Length: 432
Ligand code: UD1
Ligand code: CA
Image (tube, rainbow, N blue to C red; front, side, top):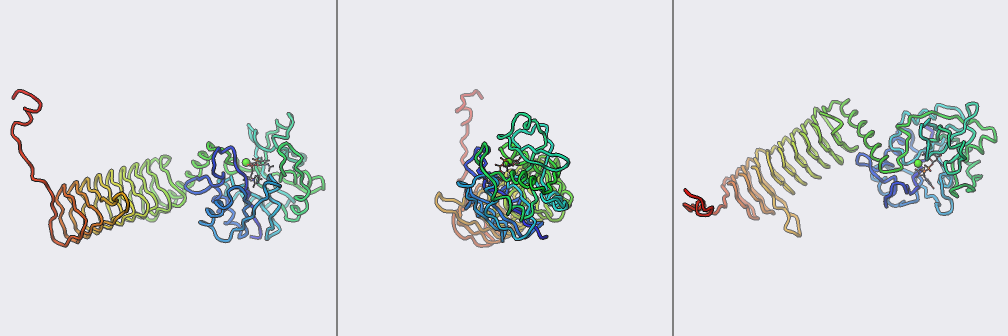
């Protein structure tokens, strides 16, 4: 589509009370600016992001997801405000849509409504019971006359409940005419993009208000807003995956990030947390398990298991209180209470309860490699680096010291048990 989209993301966001730039705060695992860019990119190839505050961090985080974005740095010291933000842009197309970087919930279908309207300027309005904090919109005869910022509004203007949601469609020539005419003679000493409206209206341009959904256009200004937006976004993600065939039990208790993918028939029980770019294929994730940045295929996990980043499970059973980190398990059973870190484990291998890979010596991390059909008894420690061939049995309670162990052996390290008759009675001074 021949449309340029400008996303304003230069502001500090002081109401977030955070050293981090507002647009870098995350919703469902990704920075909120990601979502505006994603929606914009579904519509056009020309997406211009205006930055200033923490600009290097903003560029670096968005380049992880998108190629070919145009970043424009606002001279925010000399030209602060949303009007100042528009001063350096040179869009590729005549139609220019302006979005705010702090509106992660906006969707393609809503953006498209601006383009269907032939007015010189189309601007988003929302009726709000409590309009405080927003610019108020003065409409006469169906045309927007001007916008008054809260800080510049008089008592009568403050009572207006139609507010500016901050999204506009302009013709580029309109911006070229009026942006240079903006002044900063206002309560905040800023150049307001919203002043373009009155200037254009005085010259007789048509300015249409477009009623938009509060849920999509409400900006994130505080950490409370951030949490609310995240729960709405997560509900969309969950619904999308249920629509494509995933079974979710008590879905509202499931935490799900944007990067998570499902394939085939999957069941996710209540209280599960799925993070990062995890891929779940034909698997059952049981209650209160946490999966981070891992691939789970044809497996069942949990309840109460923790699969940490860079793990890959194939045809594997992971039971309760098992932690797996950076490990590849193929056809493995680890039913209870284990830590498997930096390990590669082959098919048919059974990991007894309480098995621990001792992968860290306080300085470095080491690998544990276990072959096929290994039977590991309960409470085994594997001191890495260690390699165990196929078809090995390890007796319960064994400490397997570092080294390579050949096939078809039993490993057993146990102190012989002592029996001391009469000890109990003597120790507790009890009568027989
Ligand atoms: C702006 C509107 C207000 C509207 C509200 C809706 C103006 C003057 N006011 O106010 O009418 O009701 O949005 O949310 O436009 N930004 C920059 N550079 C700057 C300042 C801001 O890029 O110098 C960006 C911010 O990063 C943000 C967006 O512009 O994404 C809006 O800025 P914000 O400070 O939230 O504007 P409001 O004061 O809320
Ligand atoms: Ca705002």
